[in-house]
Image 1 (cartoon, rainbow, N blue to C red):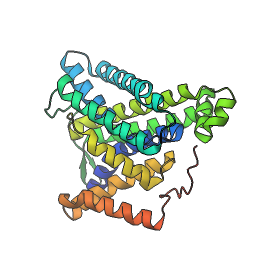
Image 2 (cartoon, one colour):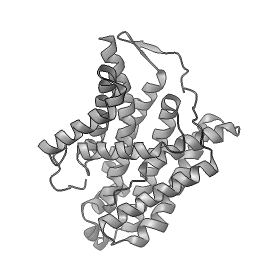
Image 3 (cartoon, rainbow, N blue to C red):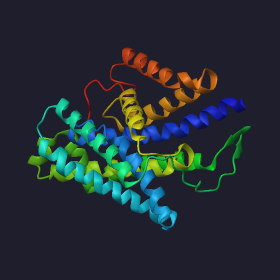
Image 4 (tube, one colour):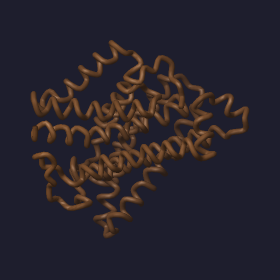
Length: 290
């Protein structure tokens, strides 16, 4: 029982990060129909920028805020200089552009930071907490709790604010939103900025557990995209469910089989689910942009 709890907590922790990356994919896809394969680089940027700003003497909270602001600025620049000029291009072209952005960010990171692995101190110390016989790092609660707060805050923002309703309108029908007087360019830019902020926060939360380096964004982008597809790309709740499920599958496969097979096991289940439900767990047959 203790082993299962240990694996489950580990899976939910890394799954929460996958869920946030997948949520970033979903936000941008819904607002602009762009699959942003640079999403994982925002996670890298959040973790690495916080590490280096803290090393320069900034208190950790201030360094984290500055890192999120930096990631948001990068997201806005990517939208303004890469995505917006290519508006109307086909999906393949847009995907190639985002892969190019990912390569540029990954190439610039060693020049700005370095190529070493880095770690942040745990926000609540390093002493493990006993949960049903398992030893759980306090940072795991920060990761899962932080992800839950972000998802709830985003849901309330979209449902309760005028700007949030404009985002929903743009996601539902961009042309109709334009005819209604909504500046859809601003909305899409907002989606990129918000996705960058979510990715950076995920990177800051998870760095005390998994370390960070200039190239961690590649695998996170793949896992986040897999989670978004598993949950049903275009569905925010599906993205969260897909991320958590993917994390659990990896942890259980690593615990009961071998860490060698954890990635393979997760992707085998992903393929099996998509064969049975092509729209993902949310059964998204035709993307309902909400």
